[in-house]
Image (cartoon, rainbow, N blue to C red; front, side, top):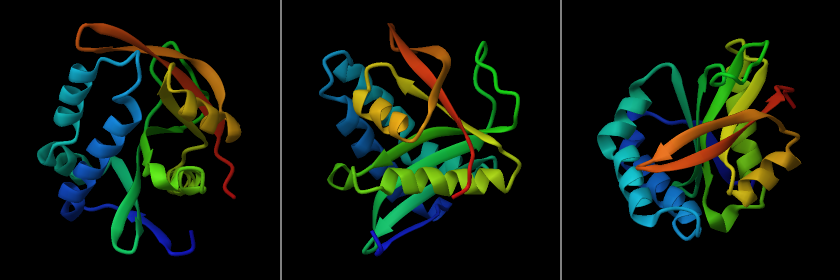
Length: 178
């Protein structure tokens, strides 16, 4: 892990970052029996296209961190200062971890934690005192990961993937810079 760097992504990273996010997102969800495959691919195509990613990277309110090893992107975190959706409530300024993806070959090596803590440090410097995120209720590996990092359940939020109702668990933890 010593040869891995984490930096803020720029608009120049849009193509490579979009391809990485698309691949890792589909890899995480495509084979899950509760996730509709064709709808999922359409969602990924719409969410990680070059123009969408470039707009995201150009938005000063959104911070995208990218992990690299040997000049190759291997993970990413997308965050923004925001409070959780109602009825979930936090009494302190917070950062939302909107996306956190790590190449499967490196999962379990601490890179997800490193990206998360990189994002928390940036957010803390801008006043955030808590982290929150929404995790699909059936994403057991992610739920176990966040449990190991002392996230607690704040509530739930719903979303639609085409015509199908999906449910996320809203998790939070205080920012304690290490």
